[in-house]
Image 1 (tube, one colour):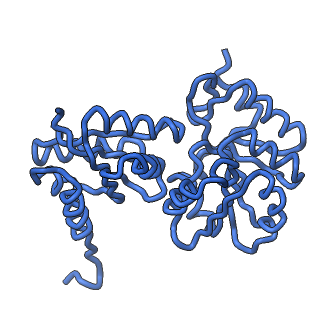
Image 2: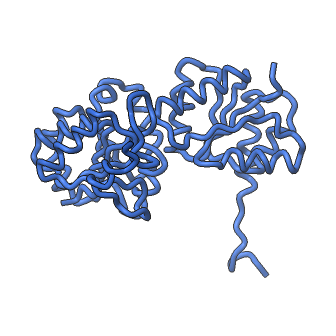
Length: 129
Length: 162
């Protein structure tokens, strides 16, 4: 079985870029596999994602945008894969939390999502002194 | 009229549509015209989750879209009428007589299609349908995102031909 525990699927080169950052920070880039929907029909995006899930045995997909084609593809695949977790709104802190955890199941996906959300902050005129 | 865009896009609802066009045009409704999706509540729920709050999503067959198009055109909110195929847009245009401009937004590589633009691949049938739209007086242009320059039908069909 591959070491891949989650697929990162997004627009253009976003997934490759995020995974390269995860690899640089943790050395655990091999826990994630990138999928891009660039230049594909909706059904080809779904097929590509399905193949990535089958190849790796991963049961978590991180996607970038709620209405994006990768998100819709992942949600479509959930119909036949009730064990698949889809996390929308991927960011780097989220992926770092995920790869540093051991099991890589849906519970880790939920914890990773929380970490990703907690790490979004703003420093502006209201809180900088 | 407040249908800002009649778009052909084989991904239907996706980032370019909801964000790329949707935000700058202030889109508040999308009419998704597709006979199969109009018959599948599961598919409809899927697309509904892809649309931001504040954007109303309608599902139409070709037949219901022809019937409701006058309402969409008269709607005070800016909207998009979206089809996944050239054929559906052609049917809507021919049966309603109310489509003035068609945006070819994305028809991606698949068997039988030849590349015209980076984001437009066409079968010979799709090419004929676009020409027939043009011949009927519909302005057909290709444009994936609002910041790109629109490409005329003749330039689109002349591109990448061997």
